[in-house]
Length: 158
Image (cartoon, rainbow, N blue to C red; front, side):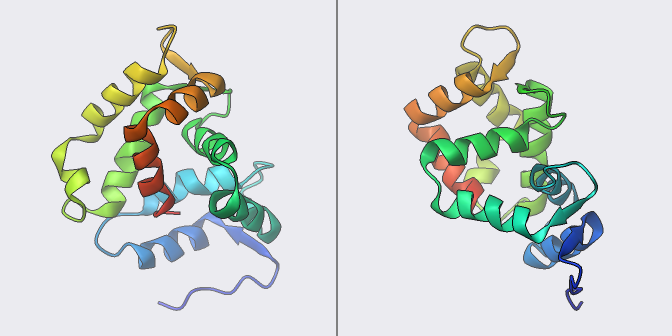
């Protein structure tokens, strides 16, 4: 279970998945690792440059709340069309639940990913058009303590 080295300074998706599987042995991390990989793979070429990874991490660790939320939005926006749909949000949430394993956190046990997303989406989709824009996302998250708390939880799985 040695972590492969990355002499080229590039990480491919398989390497990323194998690293994440070691961090979260109690669940299945492959889907979340896939989405996370996509969020870091800025130029969509199937590999992450070490610099991109470090830049992403520094935003998550030291960025302002807005920067962190922009990064989270980018993760949720799976097809990168600038909008988050309920399906996209559900896919990410489900992958986080799968990775954490069913029994790790009380907050995970209480409700299913579906209920979690229903609640979030209702709050975020302010104009009720079925999609969440980056502005709606940032505005709602900053005003809502529950959502901000989940974002903290979310930082723990990066």
